[in-house]
Image 1 (cartoon, rainbow, N blue to C red):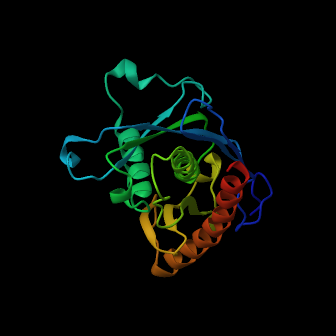
Image 2 (cartoon, one colour):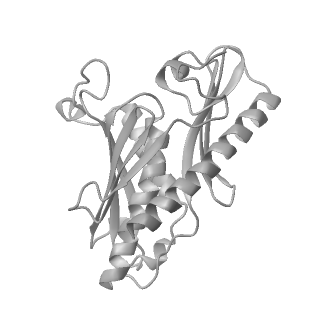
Length: 241
Protein backbone atom coordinates (compact mmCIF):
# COMPACT_ATOMS: atom_id res chain seq x y z
CA UNK A 1 0.00 0.00 0.00
CA UNK A 2 1.01 3.63 -0.53
CA UNK A 3 0.61 5.86 2.51
CA UNK A 4 -1.21 9.17 2.09
CA UNK A 5 2.00 11.14 2.69
CA UNK A 6 4.12 8.60 0.78
CA UNK A 7 6.19 7.66 3.84
CA UNK A 8 7.86 4.29 4.14
CA UNK A 9 6.13 1.89 6.49
CA UNK A 10 8.89 2.37 9.11
CA UNK A 11 9.17 6.17 8.76
CA UNK A 12 8.07 8.76 11.31
CA UNK A 13 6.12 11.81 10.24
CA UNK A 14 8.19 15.03 10.02
CA UNK A 15 8.82 16.31 13.55
CA UNK A 16 9.62 19.83 14.68
CA UNK A 17 10.15 21.05 18.23
CA UNK A 18 10.00 24.70 19.31
CA UNK A 19 11.38 25.10 22.85
CA UNK A 20 10.31 28.05 25.00
CA UNK A 21 6.99 28.36 23.19
CA UNK A 22 5.34 29.69 26.35
CA UNK A 23 7.90 31.98 28.01
CA UNK A 24 6.06 32.26 31.35
CA UNK A 25 6.24 28.49 31.94
CA UNK A 26 9.25 26.94 33.69
CA UNK A 27 9.65 24.75 30.61
CA UNK A 28 7.65 24.50 27.38
CA UNK A 29 7.67 23.27 23.79
CA UNK A 30 5.45 23.18 20.76
CA UNK A 31 5.86 19.75 19.20
CA UNK A 32 4.58 18.96 15.72
CA UNK A 33 4.40 15.40 14.40
CA UNK A 34 3.05 15.70 10.89
CA UNK A 35 -0.19 17.65 11.22
CA UNK A 36 -0.56 16.94 14.94
CA UNK A 37 0.55 19.86 17.10
CA UNK A 38 0.70 19.92 20.90
CA UNK A 39 1.82 22.62 23.34
CA UNK A 40 3.50 21.09 26.39
CA UNK A 41 4.20 23.43 29.32
CA UNK A 42 5.46 22.81 32.85
CA UNK A 43 4.38 24.73 35.95
CA UNK A 44 6.17 24.27 39.27
CA UNK A 45 4.56 24.81 42.69
CA UNK A 46 6.19 24.53 46.11
CA UNK A 47 3.69 22.02 47.44
CA UNK A 48 2.78 18.37 46.99
CA UNK A 49 -0.40 16.30 47.30
CA UNK A 50 -1.45 15.44 50.85
CA UNK A 51 -0.24 11.84 50.58
CA UNK A 52 3.34 13.08 50.01
CA UNK A 53 3.52 15.84 52.62
CA UNK A 54 6.48 15.59 54.97
CA UNK A 55 8.27 12.93 52.91
CA UNK A 56 10.64 15.29 51.09
CA UNK A 57 9.51 13.97 47.73
CA UNK A 58 8.14 15.79 44.73
CA UNK A 59 5.35 14.92 42.31
CA UNK A 60 4.88 14.99 38.54
CA UNK A 61 1.39 15.08 37.10
CA UNK A 62 -0.26 16.00 33.80
CA UNK A 63 -3.37 17.51 32.32
CA UNK A 64 -4.43 17.01 28.70
CA UNK A 65 -6.97 18.75 26.53
CA UNK A 66 -7.94 19.17 22.91
CA UNK A 67 -8.88 22.69 21.85
CA UNK A 68 -12.32 23.09 20.25
CA UNK A 69 -11.02 23.46 16.69
CA UNK A 70 -8.14 21.02 16.91
CA UNK A 71 -10.38 18.71 14.85
CA UNK A 72 -12.42 19.07 11.66
CA UNK A 73 -15.55 19.95 13.58
CA UNK A 74 -15.75 21.89 16.84
CA UNK A 75 -15.30 19.89 20.02
CA UNK A 76 -17.23 21.03 23.07
CA UNK A 77 -14.97 22.27 25.84
CA UNK A 78 -14.98 19.70 28.63
CA UNK A 79 -15.17 22.46 31.24
CA UNK A 80 -18.76 23.04 30.10
CA UNK A 81 -19.52 19.42 31.05
CA UNK A 82 -18.19 19.89 34.57
CA UNK A 83 -15.39 17.30 34.38
CA UNK A 84 -12.92 15.70 31.96
CA UNK A 85 -14.24 12.89 29.80
CA UNK A 86 -13.06 9.31 30.17
CA UNK A 87 -10.62 9.52 27.25
CA UNK A 88 -9.07 12.71 28.62
CA UNK A 89 -8.61 11.21 32.09
CA UNK A 90 -7.01 8.09 30.61
CA UNK A 91 -4.54 10.12 28.53
CA UNK A 92 -3.50 12.53 31.24
CA UNK A 93 -2.91 9.66 33.65
CA UNK A 94 -0.80 7.97 30.98
CA UNK A 95 1.30 11.11 30.48
CA UNK A 96 1.79 11.50 34.25
CA UNK A 97 2.78 7.84 34.71
CA UNK A 98 5.20 8.03 31.80
CA UNK A 99 7.05 11.05 33.19
CA UNK A 100 7.08 9.83 36.81
CA UNK A 101 8.69 6.60 35.65
CA UNK A 102 11.88 8.40 34.60
CA UNK A 103 12.26 10.97 37.41
CA UNK A 104 13.79 10.42 40.86
CA UNK A 105 11.02 12.10 42.85
CA UNK A 106 13.11 12.04 46.02
CA UNK A 107 15.46 14.65 44.51
CA UNK A 108 12.78 17.20 43.60
CA UNK A 109 12.04 18.43 47.10
CA UNK A 110 8.41 19.05 47.96
CA UNK A 111 7.50 20.47 44.57
CA UNK A 112 4.73 19.58 42.13
CA UNK A 113 5.46 19.69 38.40
CA UNK A 114 2.24 19.97 36.40
CA UNK A 115 2.61 19.34 32.68
CA UNK A 116 -0.19 20.78 30.56
CA UNK A 117 -0.52 19.16 27.15
CA UNK A 118 -2.88 21.13 24.92
CA UNK A 119 -3.62 19.79 21.45
CA UNK A 120 -4.07 22.65 19.01
CA UNK A 121 -4.32 20.43 15.93
CA UNK A 122 -5.05 16.71 15.83
CA UNK A 123 -4.18 14.22 13.11
CA UNK A 124 -3.57 11.08 15.13
CA UNK A 125 -1.00 10.33 17.82
CA UNK A 126 -1.91 13.17 20.16
CA UNK A 127 -1.14 11.17 23.33
CA UNK A 128 2.20 9.93 22.02
CA UNK A 129 3.22 13.40 20.83
CA UNK A 130 2.21 14.74 24.25
CA UNK A 131 4.51 12.28 26.06
CA UNK A 132 7.43 12.96 23.73
CA UNK A 133 7.01 16.73 24.05
CA UNK A 134 6.31 16.61 27.79
CA UNK A 135 9.68 14.97 28.40
CA UNK A 136 11.47 17.84 26.66
CA UNK A 137 9.45 20.48 28.52
CA UNK A 138 10.09 18.78 31.88
CA UNK A 139 13.80 18.45 31.23
CA UNK A 140 14.02 22.14 30.30
CA UNK A 141 12.10 23.07 33.46
CA UNK A 142 14.56 21.09 35.58
CA UNK A 143 17.52 22.76 33.89
CA UNK A 144 16.01 26.16 34.63
CA UNK A 145 15.44 25.27 38.28
CA UNK A 146 19.01 24.02 38.62
CA UNK A 147 20.33 27.28 37.16
CA UNK A 148 18.31 29.18 39.77
CA UNK A 149 19.64 26.96 42.57
CA UNK A 150 16.23 25.48 43.41
CA UNK A 151 17.48 21.93 42.81
CA UNK A 152 21.06 20.64 42.98
CA UNK A 153 20.91 17.99 40.23
CA UNK A 154 18.78 17.04 37.23
CA UNK A 155 16.94 13.99 38.67
CA UNK A 156 16.15 12.32 35.36
CA UNK A 157 16.86 8.60 35.28
CA UNK A 158 16.32 8.07 31.56
CA UNK A 159 14.59 9.54 28.52
CA UNK A 160 11.03 8.59 27.64
CA UNK A 161 9.18 8.92 24.35
CA UNK A 162 6.18 7.36 22.66
CA UNK A 163 4.81 6.52 19.25
CA UNK A 164 1.98 4.61 17.63
CA UNK A 165 2.15 1.55 15.41
CA UNK A 166 -0.56 -0.45 13.75
CA UNK A 167 -1.61 -2.83 11.03
CA UNK A 168 -3.47 -1.23 8.12
CA UNK A 169 -4.60 -3.34 5.17
CA UNK A 170 -2.44 -6.14 6.55
CA UNK A 171 0.75 -4.04 6.66
CA UNK A 172 2.53 -2.98 9.88
CA UNK A 173 3.05 0.81 9.94
CA UNK A 174 4.90 3.26 12.19
CA UNK A 175 3.42 6.54 13.48
CA UNK A 176 -0.18 6.44 12.28
CA UNK A 177 -1.94 9.56 11.08
CA UNK A 178 -5.67 9.87 11.78
CA UNK A 179 -6.77 8.25 8.52
CA UNK A 180 -4.52 5.24 9.13
CA UNK A 181 -5.49 4.99 12.79
CA UNK A 182 -9.21 5.06 12.00
CA UNK A 183 -8.78 2.23 9.47
CA UNK A 184 -6.31 0.09 11.42
CA UNK A 185 -7.02 -3.56 12.12
CA UNK A 186 -4.57 -3.38 15.05
CA UNK A 187 -3.53 -0.24 16.93
CA UNK A 188 -0.71 0.09 19.49
CA UNK A 189 0.56 3.01 21.57
CA UNK A 190 4.06 2.32 22.89
CA UNK A 191 5.89 4.25 25.62
CA UNK A 192 9.56 3.38 26.07
CA UNK A 193 12.68 4.60 27.86
CA UNK A 194 16.12 4.96 26.30
CA UNK A 195 17.08 1.83 28.22
CA UNK A 196 14.63 0.11 25.84
CA UNK A 197 12.29 -0.68 28.71
CA UNK A 198 8.55 -0.34 28.30
CA UNK A 199 6.54 2.05 30.42
CA UNK A 200 3.25 1.18 28.79
CA UNK A 201 1.84 -0.88 25.92
CA UNK A 202 -1.69 -0.21 24.74
CA UNK A 203 -2.63 -2.70 22.04
CA UNK A 204 -6.07 -3.35 20.57
CA UNK A 205 -7.48 -5.45 17.77
CA UNK A 206 -10.28 -3.61 16.02
CA UNK A 207 -11.43 -6.78 14.28
CA UNK A 208 -9.40 -9.98 13.85
CA UNK A 209 -7.15 -10.83 16.82
CA UNK A 210 -3.43 -10.32 16.28
CA UNK A 211 -0.65 -12.87 16.75
CA UNK A 212 2.55 -12.96 18.78
CA UNK A 213 4.45 -12.45 15.52
CA UNK A 214 2.37 -9.34 14.76
CA UNK A 215 3.13 -8.00 18.23
CA UNK A 216 6.87 -8.56 17.86
CA UNK A 217 6.94 -6.85 14.47
CA UNK A 218 4.96 -3.87 15.74
CA UNK A 219 7.17 -3.48 18.80
CA UNK A 220 10.29 -3.59 16.61
CA UNK A 221 8.81 -0.80 14.49
CA UNK A 222 7.98 1.20 17.61
CA UNK A 223 11.51 0.76 18.99
CA UNK A 224 13.00 2.06 15.73
CA UNK A 225 10.76 5.13 15.79
CA UNK A 226 11.24 5.88 19.48
CA UNK A 227 15.02 5.59 19.17
CA UNK A 228 14.84 8.32 16.52
CA UNK A 229 12.64 10.39 18.83
CA UNK A 230 15.31 10.21 21.55
CA UNK A 231 17.78 11.90 19.18
CA UNK A 232 15.24 14.63 18.40
CA UNK A 233 14.62 15.20 22.12
CA UNK A 234 18.35 15.45 22.85
CA UNK A 235 18.89 17.95 20.05
CA UNK A 236 15.99 20.12 21.23
CA UNK A 237 17.21 20.17 24.84
CA UNK A 238 20.83 20.86 23.88
CA UNK A 239 19.76 23.64 21.52
CA UNK A 240 17.63 25.33 24.18
CA UNK A 241 19.92 25.04 27.20
